[in-house]
Image (cartoon, rainbow, N blue to C red; front, side):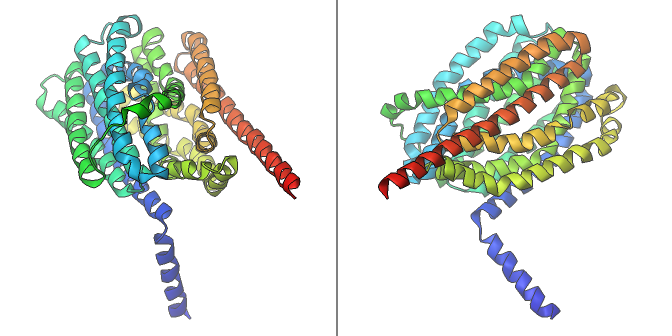
Length: 437
């Protein structure tokens, strides 16, 4: 009997492993686990080498860059994924268009970054640091993200996963170089090493793309019709980034660098705990585009497969991270004693973001990116206003409250839109079916 059960179990596992979704999910999840281990080393090395104040300076610059980041490629990665996931033979054209768009828009973003840095960043942020982080993220990392989107569009999840791990590994190597070879580690030196880690990773990624999928052959006449969608993708990503990172920049500017470093450390741990959900959303994203070609019904069908698991994980993780939070201060050192309380305050974000991302991608897949963007921007503005008033009064706790309220509203708004548009579509289909009969 046990032999029969063993054979059946083995057969069931083999059938499951034939699923592209499961294989892709395992690749992405495994890569994110590896990245998390590497990021833990990277984070500890940087946090200890720079100290809370200099780390806060780096976080402030990186957060400002992330606000501009979505516009550096004008949504070209998402546009590539949308078309290539449905028509793989169009890769060379959309890959070429993505490079052209990124070259143009990243140059504009770099100019804006340098121009507004004095108004937003603390005096400890040098021009050298700003230029290095800007080039690393606005230019090289954006092109790298487009290569990752290309591999996801054609379900080459293993290459996507390997490049993600390589990027983090190169960051760890850069952090080791800072700790070992720089006599007095400082944030400006780290900016240069951070830039080099991105350059090396992108060079390898470009070789893989050209050998695996083909060379760029821009179809410039296709760019103009896609600018509106690119704008929606960019604004949506910007609004998401604002919600994630504006609070850190504002803490560095109108709060204290100590509070910014503490809050950023806690937020980073929450991000790590979201790894399984990010793996699911990464694998599902192209599926939402393919299914969404048939409208909201197709997108909702994809969401139904993932949301129950995501919601369960979010609840369990929210409780679990509160229990293990004391380990953070032990690992990071006495300078980060307040990080335990910050982690516990931020823990509800794990549940909220676990279910929010699938609602958002349901709208995007069904061609409702514009509606999604309007809601995302509205909530991001509310988050910014909340931080402006709450941070001076409550420091990092004010930033936590602003994040929890805005994320809660975003979850409710996204799922309400999914429900309303799904009901509307089904009513229209029923009416059409009645008329034809």
